[in-house]
Image 1 (cartoon, rainbow, N blue to C red):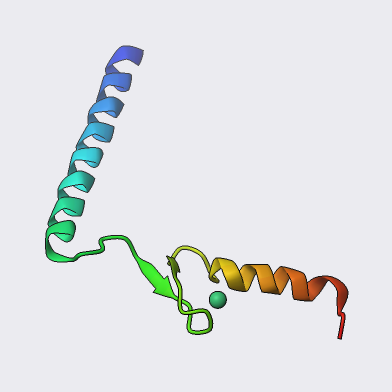
Image 2 (image 1 turned 180 degrees about the horizontal axis):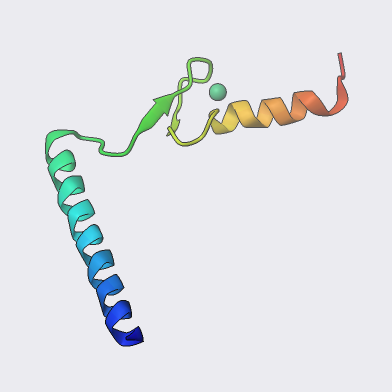
Length: 70
Ligand SMILES: [Zn+2]
C-alpha cells in the first residue's frame, strides 16, 4: 500500500516537473527573459518581480525607518 502510494506520488511529481519544463521551454523560446522581472522607477535597476521592492529601495527603507535622522 505504502509503496504504491509513494510511486504514484513520484510519478505525479515527475509529470509536474516535465510539464513545467516544457512550459518554460515554450516561454523561453518566445521571450528573451522567461523570468518575471520588475524595474525600479527610482533606481532604474531590474529585480526579481517576486520581491515587493528593489534591493536598493529595501536598503534605503530599512535605513530610513531606523533613526528618523531628519
Ligand atoms: Zn529602487
